[in-house]
Length: 544
Image 1 (tube, one colour):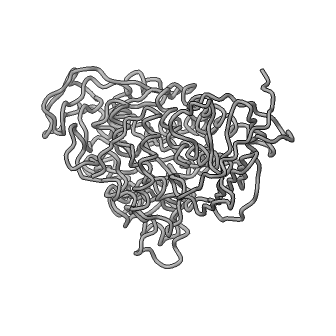
Image 2 (cartoon, rainbow, N blue to C red):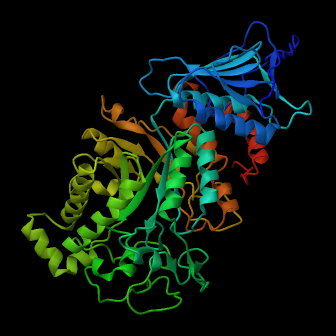
């Protein structure tokens, strides 16, 4: 049903923009007009597409206004009308794409992006200019303002571990919306680990028939007090994965899958024991956490947290298996990156394996670290042949870095600094600042993995380290926060751990360094917390 276009302007001539709007992340430049006023978005307002390819952004805005402000706008192309939200392009000539200009004035709101993403990010700013509470006048007033803005880093990421605890597609879409609303652009999806394999691979059905369900889970902080003895599992079908990827793409978010290798492989080995160097050996519960439920014979998924010695054997059988897995992964994810893990791979089994020791000699490798490098480089070469590049945790530096690898530095910054010094691209994600499974209050009322990472610490993190050699700044793509879910079994706790730390993360990644000021951020944060409440987010309100 088409809605008639009516001119509507409410000139609140006595309203003055007393201070900058409470926008997070903070824009590069905000100007107040000489003549203050407000533009009222009502059902008579149209969203006008003046540029091609902006339908996704228009749909996002239309849905938001209908859901949270009760106004249903029409979307039209190239209409000559007042009382409109105009979406168009305007090049900013910035090195990193995604910039935009937003102007609210009499008769219109104009958002001009330097590309499609820029228009989308301008819409996220517009959302923060809207009143948080519903307006009794059946509309949404927006104060006159001029904003020029663009991102500082090209990679602005958030991670989610769905292996320790599983979250359905319906919630993943909310998670992706949260990423979008904070002007971030990468979702790192951790899909395989010791406690569960979460991605359907048609060539290897046992990965989900066996590897997606564990027989129980420890209760309490590691090493645990007992085992709940509840079968726990879940996985995403390939159709569901395509749906998630499509949903994210409509919000200009790239989904990067992580398929762990050569460590964190217990779930895969439980499904296909020949992937182990010792396929006949049964899985033993860790000595420090003896709580076990169900079958104790053969290979099993892990029921506790930590690092386990049964890792992929670097055999032809394993490489053929991983190539078959990755063939299907590549078809599901259009991102140029595939994350291959590479972290926390104990070398115990490789050291006692006659096959591995012979392989080290045959390949002229120095030691087991060299064997890991051989493993990673072989998988990188295969993925490069598929048109993909790998990302790995900073352990992939051990034994020599794969030629085209991007390093995700989690054990502090040194791995990233070393990689950038060798002209490799880097994503900073040090656990000291960017692990959102850490507690955010000094005293929490539920179990966390430990450590203490409050909002201020995240906000103050600087991805470009002062220790980085001169001229290597270009290799720091950005940063990412990681949310591991050993102790996060439901969506309410997930949100509590995520918010409002995500607001600090978004500003640290987007805003110019000289615009970042924590005292100023604290003044703007209450408006964001009210918005979280409106979105029914279970955020943490105690920041220290």
